[in-house]
Image (cartoon, rainbow, N blue to C red; front, side, top):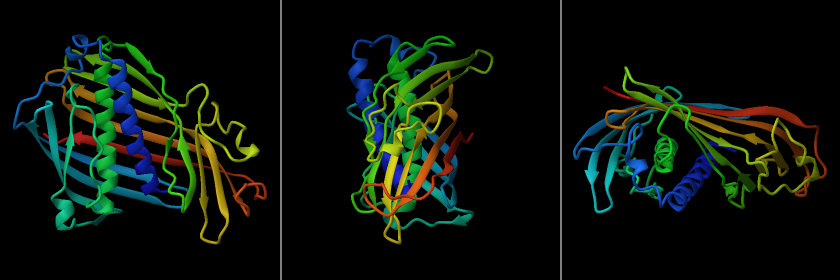
Length: 304
């Protein structure tokens, strides 16, 4: 999966996270608004985050940094944080945004009444899609934790079953692209002295992942769980690259118990891969297997 395809897979997950949380928490109206995770908003409140990311693929590594500058607005649904992006750089080189992209405003929220919404990227420079999608992942995961309504004390835990595969296949370069995950959420730490709480949201392989594998050799587990990630793509020389493996996300968020702001957060997203290059679309005539890891790490810090 190249960085752009992975971003669209993330966006598909965000839609899933929103629908899951809304479906299963309609009866938790009181608990979900209480400490330690509740977000307390003030209109016109300002926030600035600095983001750093490393995307290590099969053959290359991409690093980027960016600043997200936000202000809290109130609409008919609830409170939203409206962000403008600036100071974007890739691999140490500044990446000035054209006017349409610099005017782009991303709306995020930790208000339990405001579900995550995918941004309209039609007029946004592709360089900005990565940071915006990663920022939305942080907010969607924290929002999902808040919506559980049961994470009140250290060690409290919720497991959200899902499993339905998300797809990033475009039918041209990527013939098959799927992953299948459940959500494992834990309130890891409450620090009364610092007035902070730490939440871990893990995207984990379900007991029976629902991905579609086109070849028998893809059925054997690559790691210590059933495979939950698959991709088949066309190579530049007309062959087919079949990849199968295990994907997880570990998303750790430190939030203020005073107002629920995200103070620091990071994503660790490894994929353990077994790959074979094949001459046929059925992936029957293939080279010897190759093992490698795809890994993404993203972090945000609230700037004082």
